[in-house]
Amino acid sequence: MKGYIPGNRFSSSAEIFSWLSRFINLENGQMLKTFRLERMEALAELAGHPERCAPSIHIAGSKGKGSVTSMIASVLEADGCRAARYMSPHVSDYRERISLGNSFFDEAVYCAAGDILRDLAESGAGAGRKESLFNSACENDVPSFYEMLTLLFFLCAKISRCDIMVIETGMGGRLDATNIVDPLASVITLIELEHTSFLGGTIGEVAGEKAGIIKKGRPLILARQNAEAFDVFGKRAAMNNSPLFYYPDTATVENVRIHQNGTDFTLLFHGKDTAGPLRNDAMELFIPVPGMVQAENAALAVLALKTAFPGIGEEAIRRGLRQIKIPARFEKISGRDDPPLIIDGAHTPESISLCAETFCSLYGEGGILLFGCAADKNAKAMAEILLPRFSQVFITTPGTFRISNPEKVFTAFSAGLSGQGEGKTLLVNDTREAIKQALEAGRERGLPVLCTGSFYLISEVRNYGGYYGCQNTG
Image (tube, rainbow, N blue to C red; front, side, top):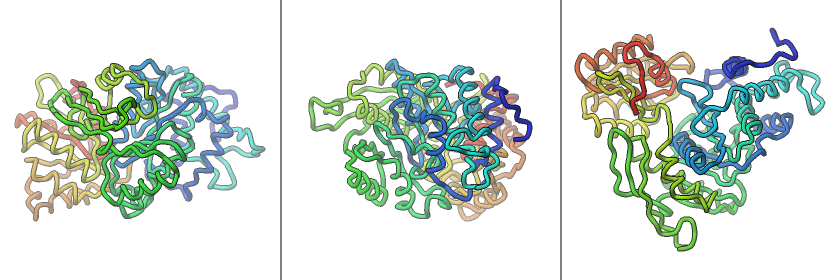
């Protein structure tokens, strides 16, 4: 590779992520010709199978999987485990994707893992390769950014001698690079239509891809689903002889109290075995994230923990949930004297609806909305949900990382509600200028601001600084 000097070593995690950016990255609109799990399996073999260094819990789904992943890792950390956590996307720092519980790994861990990864890529060592992974004569053998990032996570987990890995899939499940693990339990959150060009155009097809993480004999913890998705998961679990723990049947949340500092709720278990971990019982819990959906995510996380680790203590569950840190999940960011600024990564109609409902229940109707989404999202459906609840809407480019079409999104919003959106919708293509104008509008009118849509837009707002200072106020 150009500029590569054998024996060079990484001196920071930032150098590693910069080097990884040379690989094909779907998140940036680049395309692989094929999706093949065999390529990831071959990489893992070259690296000595670091994915086998510790037991794991594997999480897939369309929405909530990042929150569930964070919650499980935080509780395990509170229980005294070294819990390596893998999730995406990041908001402010790539290390958010590869972390140890609620904290980053030591820089020495990232660098040691990065050195191994680069040596493998450059030398092609192992399996009798004669060329590097960069210059393979067969394009299908060249790994992607995400595959290399996933291997970096496994190497960090192994080097740090973690006790457990909590792993979120990137997209789908069946062919996702993370699907080389044999987990203690699989968790699948709510399914929606998403990434239809890759996963299929029906709920059943999307569910079929997600169901690929269900392993033989391993329990499946399943969030509330519609009938079509539930049928797919039920059949796959039965085919794999996997015990199925369905959230509405196994546990429910009651007495939900949503406030600006988070959510209090009662988690009820409906287990018939009075001596088992899911015995008929109740727990009073708090999470520092507002929203009914987050209470249900926490219930799913606790179900997974009690299934995989029947002896886990209730105090660890309470403390771990209290301590979760989930950037860009209904996160409040504002200056001391400014109106509230809420950022929430929501880019499907269902998640947008839940986000808007929570925001308006806490801060009232008629606030300011800043919105941007990738080109493959259903902007029209999201516009119909959001327009009635906001007095002014700013549409912008969701950063530069994903392919987007802000003009098309603007058209969907301005034409929404039979054209009523036109008078209150503004298109500001420049992302930083849109952030500035939305925040100024909130301040001048004394109105709360919601920034939602793409995680990449959320990242831009979170890192904006200047006007609001972007201090996390919890």
